[in-house]
Every structure is written in structure tokens, then in C-alpha cells.
Length: 246
Image (tube, rainbow, N blue to C red; front, top):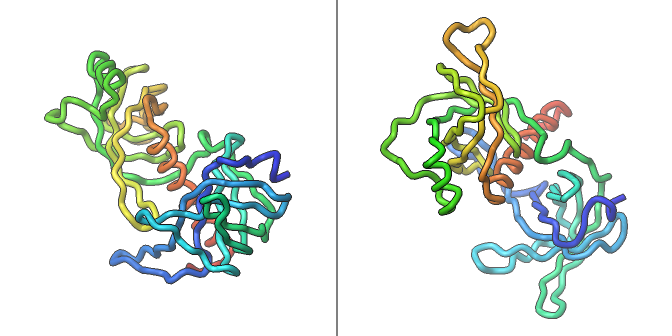
């Protein structure tokens, strides 16, 4: 049931189903996505959300328009389609009424849902002293003059990643990752710290290693950005498998 999975206050992304598509120079289709919060659960097929703000102004979404919803719930990541049924202002709160037009679909637990991918990255090892300073002062990283090594992320989730490198890392060592994700057609750079869970030779490829990493000291904004990227990529895969042309 919807009320058992989503509660008021949960973050939700609304992506237009029929939007004015913008195609970038590299052929990426951009669709409008609005981020907001669940305001109220009216019934199992009707919810209210706070009307999204864009550049400090209320975005008046049109009644009758359809949206692809992604809920970031404490119980996991959920998706469904909905149609705008109402919009109004109550006690200085701008509210949007939405009627669900498809069943709520659960992805795997959002922190552990993994996406196979190929993402170029840069990395370097972080010493304990530096890591303690990062954690204490809430900064990204300190020694910016140190050389970053090349690597390739082949698997990513909100909780960690796997990447290929030409060196073996010690278990429990800390690694700085710098990589770029394409969110809504826009490149966003991330700098995160990971702890090595396992580093092992890559089968069939001499001199290369597969490293299993758990993200640590990550803020909510970065984690939600990674989760959103995974959701967008997974949605593209589902649409292709269904024969839907973007």
C-alpha cells in the first residue's frame, strides 16, 4: 500500500512525460525534472506534494499533465506515474494534487541498488591523518597538489562502487574518488571518499585490479545525486527494453 511505503516529508522527483525535449550536442535528451516533498497522502491513489520552486519562484505545473514520479522513501526507492489533478494555496503553502495512474513499483533498497556502468574516474589514497581532518572539518579533501591516478568505475550504488585500477589497494585503506555523472543531461562532478573492502587481481587481465569500495563520510546531497543518476539510467534501460523510443 502507498501509505505503508511513502510518508509526508519524503523527497520526490517529478519528471515530465510529455516535455519539450532538448537535445544536447552529444545527443542526450533532457527532460524537465522537479524536486519537491510529499505534503499529504490522501488515499492509495491520490497524493499531495509541495509545489516545486525553480530559481526561487513557484512552478505552476499544468492540470492534466503527466509525470514520472520517483519517491526517496525510508523504505526504499519507488516509482510510478501520476497526473496533476489540482493546485492551490493553503496557509501560505502551495500544494499540487496528483492522481496515481500506475501501481507503485519498488526498486531494490536504494542504498544497495547497483548499476553496471563505465565511468572514467580519478583517484588517490587518503592517509588516516588527512581523513581525520576531512571528517573533523567537513571538507572534501586537503592535499590538492597530489597526483590523481586514472581508473574506471564499473559498478556504482548509493552505498559504494567497484572500480578497475592498475594497482592493488590495501584493505581498509581510504580512497578519494573524483568522477562526473550526467544528471538530467547536465554533467555534475563528485568528490567522495571510499573504504576498500576488497582489492583483487582482475581475471584475465594482468596488472589490473578490481576494487570493492564502501562510501564513507558522504553527505546526503551527494548520495541522492548518485541515486538519482542510477534511477535515470535504469529508467532508460527499461524504456529500451519495452521498445519505447526516447
